[in-house]
Image (cartoon, rainbow, N blue to C red; front, side, top):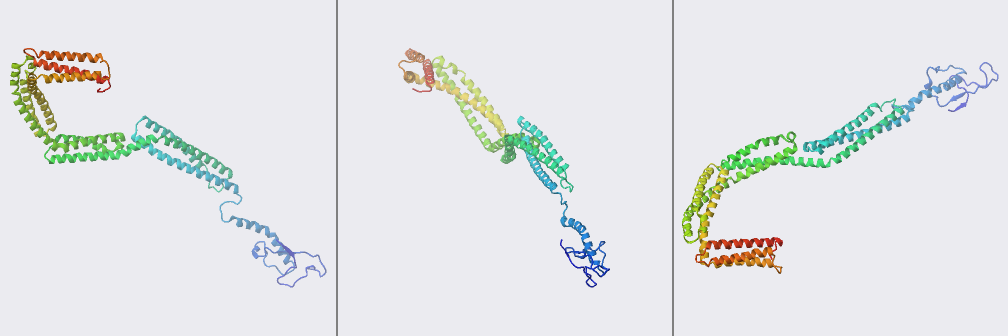
Length: 499
């Protein structure tokens, strides 16, 4: 502010000499007057402004004095309006605002940690539910217990965070620095606890890898397994319908398929009610049984035709055996007449046994025919198998009588063939016993020497007046058996080498 001395100015009168007093015309004391240049505007009119100054010499100095007096009041009134700027904060609050910003940053960081922990806990709960739905092992139960304990830790950390947030209103206008600092400390501590629990949660999640992988694998198998079971049941039903369309009742297959209906109901109820492992096991069982039913239904037409063919074939064979068994008695008569009693005594009952077996076979064939007509395929198959066993036994007995007579006739005509056959077996065994050795092993040599002596005695017996050809045949066969046992022993000792 600048002031300069000048002469008073009267707006309505002539210029006055300031060196003279107002009442005398001589020299007087000079009073300097300062005029304010900054605040000239008429804004100072008011209670302190007297309005228009009356004409006279005292008007100029009084106005300037009043202007100087009003200046401090104007400055005080103008400062708040100049620096407020329309805001909501006090001008002299800088330190509190810094603490407020730090506390708000700590609050935001804690909120982010809380959200991250909550999200991870939700994801882990889904994993735990997946494991418990599939796995009932002790490891799975232990994982559930650990998750519950970890959940309590999470609840404690979350409670601490929520209390810290609720305890401090960071948007208050009168928030002081100490309160903001305390809020920042508590929120930072809450965030630290949330972070520690989050690390524990992450370690626990990593440890669930094997259990979760196994559970997810079983869950991935669940839907396809149930669908395969449904398709298998549908295929079995379609195959059964096709068999019935061909005139085959297939009552047993229909009953087996109907027994699977409750299993299908349980599959449709889902794993949530019956458990994932149980549902997978049930689906696999239904698939196996339904596929078996379908396969049998598909084979029914072929099975019916095969049963008919076997029935005809076995009837023909039974008739042929009846004819052949009638020829056993003449064979036995010739054996009795020409050879010793030892060759025919074991065959004495063949005719009666053959006749009885054929009779039983024909009875079973009749039952099999009835079962086929009634489409009891399992019964028909079992009966036909019994008939086949009876006919095989009868065939062997009937053939034994004829074979024995042919063997005796051949030896009587030329025994040399049987002798050479036996000698060849002995020489072959002797060569094997001497292979790679200078002297034979006594365990091998003694049985072979006994075989040679036995053969010589059998050949000598043929020189009798009434040679026993049946004894000769049984002796040569016994010699060959003993030689075969020595050969088997040698090869076993030599590790399977044939020499």
